[in-house]
Length: 434
Image 1 (cartoon, rainbow, N blue to C red):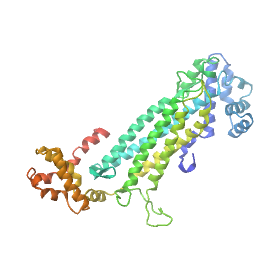
Image 2: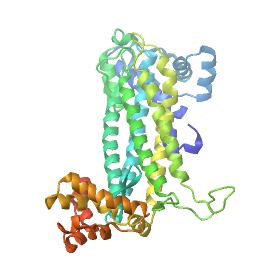
Image 3: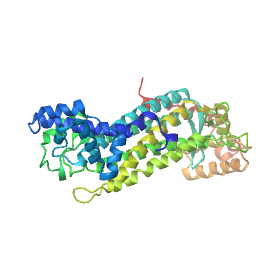
Image 4: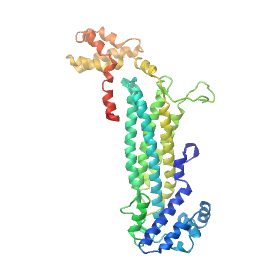
């Protein structure tokens, strides 16, 4: 993670001070449980809480010698606790501390990401209702298809990020487990009650069965969920990038006073934020693959996952946190051009109503094949005229059409309102009836 794409609250979760504080709390709560079981003196457990301290620089210095981060931490902690420190870490192994801490950090990160999604959803909802009936052209394959509304475009994004939030809730639950089970996970030297106590104190639940490490399929699911959310970010960012193209220009990112779009061309207003979101999404997705590969560890444990998680834990969560906040800002300040949307919609001389004509002719007794042939022939003529001709005029001059459809009936087939008649129904499906 780099400062350019980091926000302080998420970055703080992964700071060394936070990590070692979590390690201390795990060890201290474990001592409390051991004391209640009579394994260690209660005075020793109290001493850990009362005198327990650590210094990041000192831990780093010890680690350079012993080449083991948990031992370095315990050594520094013992320097403060004194003789009672011999009771710390009784029956535990390093993974008990590392894995439980990692899951706590992932849970806290998920809570921040959930808040990010909540803010994005509120912004999407507001802008969707603002443009519920702002008519625009729907595109398939990048080509004009039929009318829709800009509000519906945003409602689609809202529904997608609502699903993302539900997945994140499930992913958070997936990793909210604690393992204090000792070497190879058999509880040979520590009572399962210690694990239950630590889990309760740290807001987790006991891992049903660990193999000295918490199973990494849980983490794979977590990072895969972040990757899917990133893909949803990119989908909306890509839509905005297309809409800002000069030839389209139906919407564009807010351009601040004093902002410059190009070092060479003073006229440029580029979709740099949406392009940035596309790049950030690529990075978050990239972190999912090593998380999937971490699932296959050797026997009861190895540490091939360790270096991976030290990188992807902070990087994936910090990057996604930044991207969600940036997307919320983009949507919040997005400039929308309804007049340009209407002009683009009308650019192709009524071709957007071709399906209505096709269906009307079949309702009047013409075979679908003949109706398609006739409408397509006139549609291609309009297409080749670059919109100078109008589909309705060509159809009115075709006796095969007029013998089945009156002028009034044809006129009615070119009514935009027909395409908007179920907008409210869709909105109630997405947003509820309130």
